[in-house]
Structures are given as structure tokens and as C-alpha cells.
View (cartoon, rainbow, N blue to C red):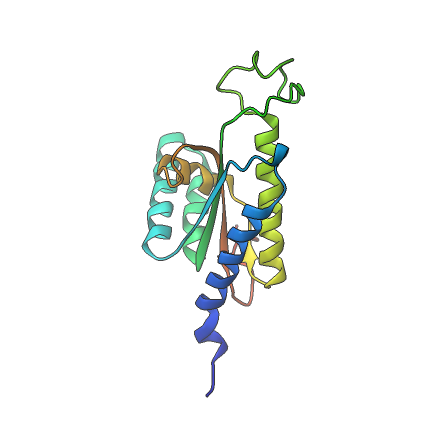
Length: 173
């Protein structure tokens, strides 16, 4: 049996994406409390995400949304990650407030944000290990949040994934 590399790309990207979900889940978390959620998009869901990014461009006028909405259409899959908001009760003051109780609800807990960053890094490392091209995008994350892809979560980020001869998520013009 001959397996053509071009015919197996989508499968390899999906396998790497699934491993990225695991890496994000098992990444270290403050106090061992897991408040991360993540999912993998493909097909029509990528198109829907792109359309929401275009809507954000129309709403805000920010060029990043227009550029990235076109760019993610080159992805074979999109990794989505976000965190629920839950102060960790450490009173660390990293959020800018002396105690967790004095922090306004709209201000994210710094530990939640740190945990999210560590999980993103773990997922990106898996993509790199599999030689899958990716880029962390806040713009796609904003659209994913508007679509409520991970109910109850905030601070969304996305990583479009591709397996091609050149990473389409850099040198975008």
C-alpha cells in the first residue's frame, strides 16, 4: 500500500491537535485546580470562526481581524483554549489588588491567566514536536469567545494548524 503524504495531511494535523488537547489538559495549574477548556475545530467550524472575525473587523475597524479571518481559512484545524474565571485565593496581588476579595470580578485572576499561558505553551510544543505549523492568535480567540465555543470561559486564544511547505500564519502581508 502506498500512502501519499499529501493525502494524509489532514489526518496528521487532527492527530497533533488531539495531542495538543491532552497537553493543555495536563499542563501544570495553580493549586492543581483545572479551569481550562479546549476544543479542536475543522471544516465548517473554521469558516464560522472566520466569519465571526470578519464581523469583529466590521464592528471595530481593526485590520487584524480582517487579515486573520482570511488567514485561518488556510488552517486544517484550529485549536481553541480558554479559562473559566476563578480567583485562586492566594492573595498574591499579581492582579494589581491586595487580596482576591478586593479584586473586581471583571479583572482576571493572574493565576488563571498564567495557567492559560502555560497550557498554550504546552499545546504549541506538541504542534512543534509533530512539525505542525501554528500561531497563537488573540483575534481568533476573540471571535471564539463571541461564538461561546467554550461556555462559561473567558480569555480565549486560538492556534490555527497547518501542514504545508511553508507556515501560512507568518509573513502574512
